[in-house]
Amino acid sequence: MRRRLLLLTLLAALFAPGAPAKEKQKSPSSNDPGIVMFWPSQDNAALKLTFARFQNMGSYAGQMSLVSNVTVQNLSSKLIPKASFSVSLLDKDKIRVGNGILVIDDLNPGESAKVLFQCTSVGAPAQLAVSARNNGGVPASLKTIPVTVISVPAGASLKVDGKDEGITPTKINVATGAHQLELKKEGFAVATTPLEVAPDEAPGGSITITLGGLANDTVELRNGSVLTGDVMSMTLESVVIKVNDQDQTLNRNDVKKIFLVERVVTHTVTAPETPPKAPPPTPTPPHQ
Image (cartoon, rainbow, N blue to C red; front, side, top):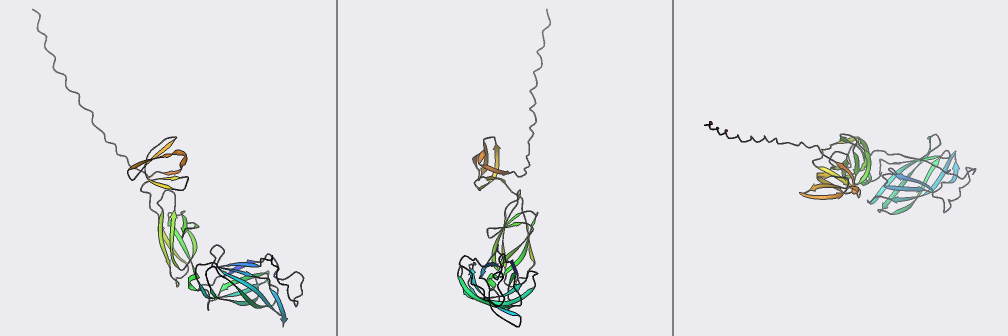
């Protein structure tokens, strides 16, 4: 399983200012939000970890014994039967000064649990780093794989399972399982395609999607609906579009955008009619 790291700079000190290293720290007040971290990322979080303020339980041979009550919330729709994380304590220069193991068992979707985290440290930490362990790490159902999505042409807006994921080409992190991709670009038909990610999928893969041209004119309304057909006429007050062989008249102010496909118009030239020949003149009889 690919190792993932999360770094969070703590805005408040992990220890009470000026407290001697050997003294136990006071428990955080009810108003203290603690140190909140999301795994694997805040935008695609499966777990929310809230570390209460660390307490120094004592020192021996230059090492402090620290404890923190961690509230773990399962934000995913999957049961987490067991997961374990390595938690590293870093100083202000991002040098590791301590580490410990955080283990989670039988956490249902939406459920929270309080876990006691214990570790040792040779100095006061300024940052935390959390990574899933290769041995007994997060279950495959929560594993995410980085995939690069490319569109031809580039510059299409991408949605994964209905969620905006930026403009192509772009790299996304998707969980194992089935997903639905949707790409939109002005002047091209909407493209949708399924994406299946296996638990043993290697990271760094890519998928290329070619966008097709529009087959019909498209009228996008301000309420978000879209009509496709043949635009028959446009005036300052209305737009007429033929949809399924039926003309629909739209108020011009209800129309947001109109995309017109290129059409080849063939003109039939009719030869002018040949005027009938005039009858020959009647000869004039000679005068007597």
